[in-house]
Length: 313
Image (cartoon, rainbow, N blue to C red; front, side, top):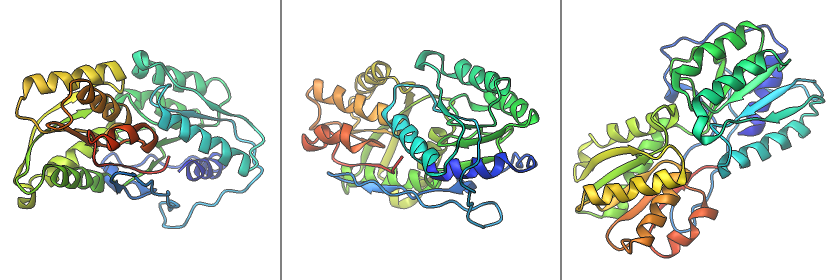
C-alpha cells in the first residue's frame, strides 16, 4: 500500500490541482488496495494490489522526482503504522525521490488537534504532499482544504475524510463492505450454529474507517443468515491499550451473557484478549477482529482469540 500511495503523490504533486471529489462519494467506493483475508490460527496477511487512477488506469510514477512529503498516521506508537512507514520509506527509496519523506504524527492523547496542527504547519513549511490516516473525522477537512488551496497534494490512506473535503484521493487498504462481512463471518464461525451475543470494541468515534467497517457489520447482520447473532453494544478504547483493556472488562460486567468481543483495531484486539486471559475467561468470552499475527499468536494458541483477520500494511 505504501508504494501505491507514494506513486500517487509523485504523480499528483507534479500535476495541476485536481478538482475536489464529490462529497457524496462513499468510502466503500474509494480506490481499493487490497481485499481483507480471514485469518485463523496463523492469520496470513494479504498482499496489497495496485490501485487504479479514477480513469481506471494504473498510476505509474516517474522515478527521480524531488517531492517533499509527510506521512501522517492517526498517532504514533502503533505497530501497523510503523510498518506502513517502513513500506513508505522503502517506496521512497525505490522511486528515487531526492527530497525527504517525514513520518510525523501526534500523541494518542492529542490525536485530533495534533493531526490538524501537523497539516496546518506542513502548509507553511514547503511540504508538497501529505498522506493522512485520518483520526479527526471532518474536523480535519478545513485544514486539508487549506493545504490544497496552498498547492499541496492531499491524499488519505487507511482512514478517509468522511465528507471527502480536502482530499484528492483516498487509498483504501481493503474493501470496507467486505470487512464488515468478514467480521460477521468470524463471529458466526466462533459462536457456532447456535450463534450468540457479542459486542464491538472500536478505536476512536471519529475514525472513519472503523465507523465504515462497523456500519458494514451492522448491515451484514440484517441478513437472515446471521439472525442468530446479536450485537449488544459498541464501545471505544481510543486505540490506547489501557482504555481498551478497561472497556473490555466493562463489557463483561455489563453483559454477563456476552460470548465474544469483536475488535476491528490492532490495539483493541490485543487489549481485549489480554483482559480475557487475565480474568480467566477465554473459555467463555472469545475475542476476534483485526490484529497483527505477531501480536496475536499467544492469544490464538491459548484459545482466547481463535480467529482474526488483517491485511499487509
